[in-house]
Length: 293
Ligand SMILES: [Zn+2]
Image 1 (cartoon, rainbow, N blue to C red):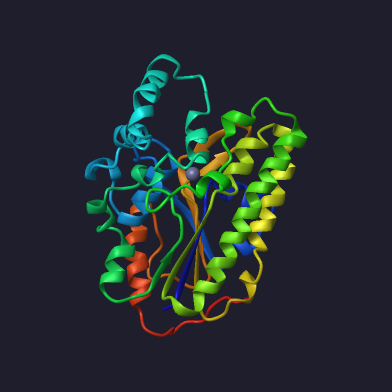
Image 2: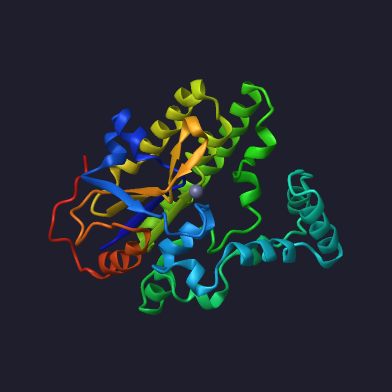
């Protein structure tokens, strides 16, 4: 079955329920456990989602990512980056952002090594001949374009509300651009993965308790992505890597999922998606009804 996976970073079930966002809840929904992951950290969790394995057990660890973040600098800057990390760990000198802007930071190096990529459902389904679309996805194929989409929360903590809100809206524009590319990919692909750093970015940057109301606006925007409701005869799986406890400014240790069909089984942990998605894509034409309202 043609399957669209909408990956929403940091989407929290409690807020989806509180605000009664039926478009996000779809027909069936629930949470999946991510507490066994080394750290509730975005690239690690998405790698567990893609491979169905604990990244720590297959060599994609915090240590690996941190090492690769240094290797991503051109050699001339590596020593400087190492010294900064060792002696000024809390100080954000913006070195990485600057290097990205100059086009000399190779973000691809921080993704999973290719031997682990082979274990993702993306590679496995491609090997079986399915057309898979995956554009810029954490741990898989992030590259410098992320610079423009990502909001660095540390940089914005002390800024005024207006400035922070403007930055979040700019980042949202990239979500829409990416979504439009995904819409164009749907007709010619069997499996399509869409990823956005929302609502996580909004939670992080509009961090004050009373600003939750503005974060809600982005949940509504996600629910109303252009044409999402008009897509028919396609499995729509919405997934988040972890939730968000806004008042504590922290990630919760479970993610969200919802689907517009009855799934063969419901994911209980982040590892369950790998087999589930392979099964969905392999299943020939739909026997059951889609909730296409
Ligand atoms: Zn995340």
